[in-house]
Image 1: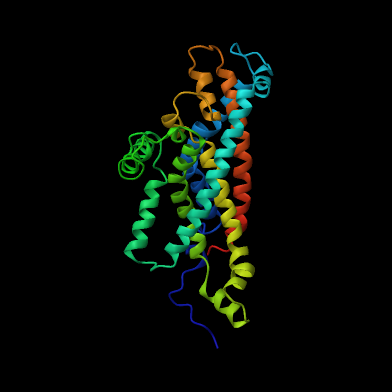
Image 2 (image 1 turned 180 degrees about the vertical axis):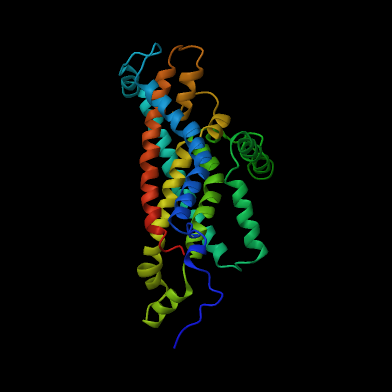
Length: 310
């Protein structure tokens, strides 16, 4: 039996073959397009993160005339005020991170127990998104208007309870800073930790209950280990957030250089000690090393926790 070839073009009449759609050439073009799309991001990172870091690192090891020196680093370790500022900043960051992490986790648990599409949850999450960025002069003014020497709560207690003038000097101390920082640490914890709580599945609890486990057994053997990396990662993020904060503390305690961020500003802006800018860069380099170490730990923990958030 023969097959008819009527109407079939000869091989010489067929069009020349070209690259198939989605082939190797197309894949290379797509990859190149992705790299081009990342150019603005890399330019932003290089201009506002890498370049300032490089300037700080070079300035920490040079004099004002550009000569190499270790005097700036030596001044940081030899000056008690600098060492104390690092200690106070770390203490403030640790305490406020723990307060924010614990209270924020409890608030996140209360939110996740409600209706996931309810108006109350949407309101709380939106409010926390705003309050997490609420700092500086505005937060300090609101804080002092509430618990300052002439604050609303202070006047209410004085006029209705004690009838005497109270000593509110604690507001301008480390205790006041801890209370002030908690205002933005707790909302930030909710934003960071809430997705991890949403990732807990009811099937896991049901499976634990079917094997005879109670609520305590579930949190000890299932829920706790799953949430631990996310909780620790959020704790490190809160530490970094408090350790690097400047405007809020400066607005509350403008006299003095108790924190390392304030010490940097004092070295750069001082009208008494001139030519200490590179000492401030050495202090900033110390902050960069601490923050970079913490953020590397945070990235490692988040990578381990991401497999549970699906």
